[in-house]
Image 1 (cartoon, protein in one colour):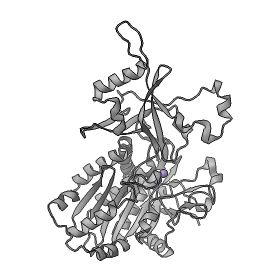
Image 2 (image 1 turned 180 degrees about the vertical axis):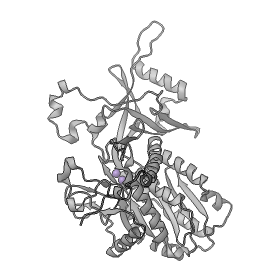
Image 3 (image 1 turned 90 degrees about the horizontal axis):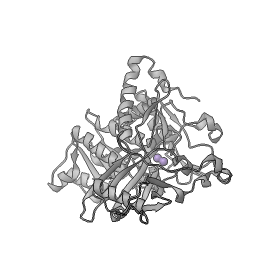
Image 4 (image 1 turned 60 degrees about the vertical axis):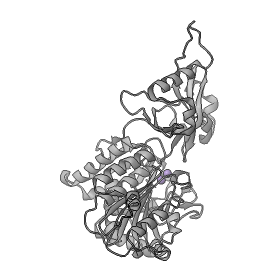
Length: 465
Ligand code: MN
Ligand code: MN
């Protein structure tokens, strides 16, 4: 049973215009939003333009909500939930589009700056699952925040503007790599060696003598002048080291996008746009939930395990004037979820890692994974057959192109998502998302038509689930 290629829907220039236009908006978003904070800022600005109000403001004024109202809530600048209130009782549940906005990367350590051999470097600790050898010898940018003791937050974004310098990690020249090339892939470049080069001009004293750690001192002098940053401010900072530069159209036919952070901003962006661009009246309340920390296990205050979603749901219920603990629990139980995260697209260069009949294919539309997990579905949500049947009907109603897949061959590896955490509320949840080539690499690849079918699928879900 083979699924059709989704480009078959868009054979004329006229038909494909919407696909390419939507992809261009996404390409620009992906180019400028490389941290969870940057994503949240982008989403707030766009949502406010489309009439969404901050739920905190409504709660503060003891305000009320009614059908048709649009609200959003933000958690510590790194996670957010958006809602369109439907006409039905909230006890019937919501239709939730979930995705994550954190991506694999390297984070600066708290005491990162040091000098070695007349070179200044920043020490990192990688975040999420990466093949470390992929992150050397590429241009890198620094994105994030540094917080002064006064509470002042300094935004850092260096390496994206054409006039900015970039940074990077060196690799050993092939001529001297005899020992390195004999190592296992996981050890070719080791985590503690992911040190980012940031300077090499030493400061000199009046007599022209270079003092100890003078390169580091000179970097600190520049940081002080340009950003008013002291070395100690790195202690209270979140600086993410990410690939520098814009996402690009990929292929002669420009059918794909190459960029950093498709996982999982491709699902986050399409889920978000499906919700905020929805204009018709909804029976069921619709929600888009964009979480942080998925790549390190959904833990902490801004991850899916946090009570943020549940608490926000309670506030929302209260603003509808009808809150009780029991009603909230009933409402949570009745929710339906598309828990979206990227899927591995079958890679013809590495086809042996996949099982062809149950793999996702680039260009065949929105992917549904009944289950994820590893070693016998461990850690998976495993959607019920009844719910999968319902999802099939919803997708086909709007002629959405979709496919089903699992992550590679049995016992090849595997992975988890936020789906099982939503499942803990007894919600109906299925994993869905966009297929990606080179997942977790500094530059990942997606198909524009898959992105567009995801948008259509999420729109259909909000309307009919
Ligand atoms: Mn991932
Ligand atoms: Mn992911």
